[in-house]
Length: 135
Image 1 (cartoon, one colour):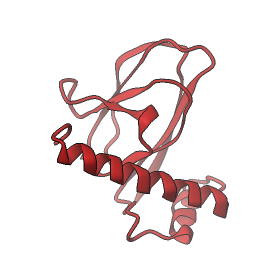
Image 2 (cartoon, rainbow, N blue to C red):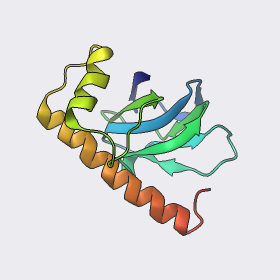
Image 3 (cartoon, rainbow, N blue to C red):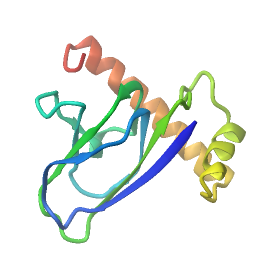
């Protein structure tokens, strides 16, 4: 099980900036501007990080990050590998344990925010899959 934090200053424009990191889940902590990702291939569909809380059961080996220049804005997200981040199987204590293993200070409020974002992301991704927007 592994969790890696990524933080980007959005004042620098990016066009398919490659992040070589395998993961099964992605959780957006904050996105104060516009940021987009593509999973595994630059030709895959674009996912707006500013509109979702994250992805789970995604299984990817790299991410391509794109954003227009937005001074003062940022995006922070976590990539998890072999971590079951499903609203049906993870508890507040499990989230605290996962993040504490990576030396992240987590309180119950933060853990509840993460769960809320995961539930929202699950609903959005399910709707997008049903609409054929992502495979």
